[in-house]
Image 1 (cartoon, rainbow, N blue to C red):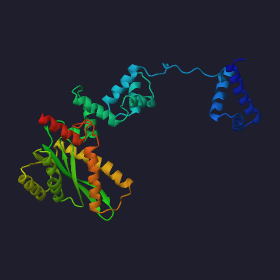
Image 2: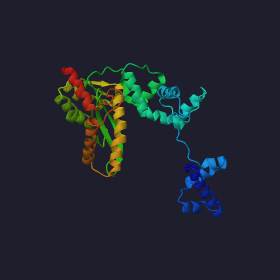
Image 3: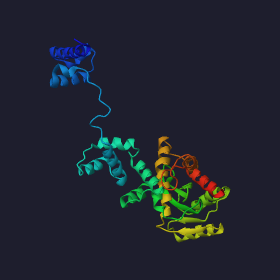
Image 4: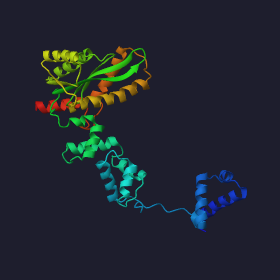
Length: 333
């Protein structure tokens, strides 16, 4: 009897011991065998007899159940053609072409190809669009405009930092003792570089303060001319006050409810709510004065502008600070 047969006989002895004891757990304990292996041997013995208890040969790398390369390519093409579709829906689409692949296998293929999430698919589509190698379908365009609001501004003529600053106000959260907190934000339409002031009011004065004390001095230090500030429609008194201030600074005030460049402000709002609030709540900062919250916001802005890489339209992996520096380098050269 060779070693393989002796191993099979030893496993058979464990199965027979379990029969005599009427207790599989006790037989496994006495034999030093885990119960998963025990039940695997039991099933194989029932199907194949003693031969089923011998060691199996390792599965060859070219397993017959490996997904063919052309099918994997079809899965990746479908994920990019319909980026909002999940793995279940892709599987149902393949079935219509008589191709059966499980959703789990589809997810593994997409993950390996770097297309496992909507975010990675969106980034891949935008990169192809930027390189001019891909003409987007209606489904792809709709997905990208929802995934990255900045993409709505792809037709806007913003060719340098400071050409259009997007200004707007949005609700951040409600803090105990302070009530609602609003962000008066200014976002550069070229680089996504952002500035902001927190306030408990939606009045225009904090917005002007953000421009006067933060945004305009920053661009002046960079020797970058600010050409226009874009806002959505605001009340007549606020519009008059803001236009008067901007006119004194030699800056044009543009007002448009539908201008696509406001997508930069919308994207900033989404990121601020998701990341800043998560940081505040994770550290249990639920009660704080407005000055403390402004310091927290300023610290987060440093990360947003200088360390956080922005995928997709305009930045394509660069931080806002890098986008400005790169543009300045090209201008000087």
